[in-house]
Structure formats: C-alpha cells, structure tokens
Amino acid sequence: MYTWVKKFRGEPEVVAAQAFKSEDHKLKELQKQIRDLQEENEILKKAMHFFAKDRR
Image 1 (cartoon, rainbow, N blue to C red):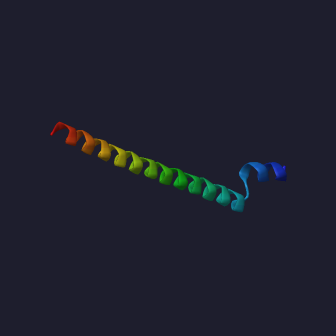
Image 2: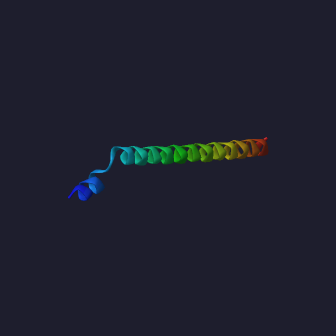
Image 3: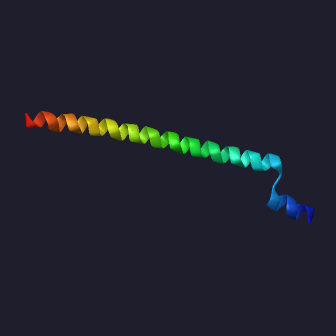
C-alpha cells in the first residue's frame, strides 16, 4: 500500500521537479512563440514598405 500511495501521491521532490520541468517547458514554448511573432512582424513590415513604394 505504501508504494501505491507513494506512486500516486508523489514525493514532494519529484512533484517539484516535474512542476519545474513543466514551467521550464512552458517558458521555452512562449519564448519560441515570441521569436516567431517578431519574425512575422518583420516580414509584414517589409511587405508593407514594398507595397507602399509600389503605389507611388
């Protein structure tokens, strides 16, 4: 029974490490999303300037 409780309740150190990994993973995903959005903004700015020059 002890092993079952240990397995499903989790040890505090293990739970803390899993939470840290989860937060670290979320942080990396958000940083990647920010980089992607910044790159998209740069592309859109260049396209805007290209089409703005074309109209003159």
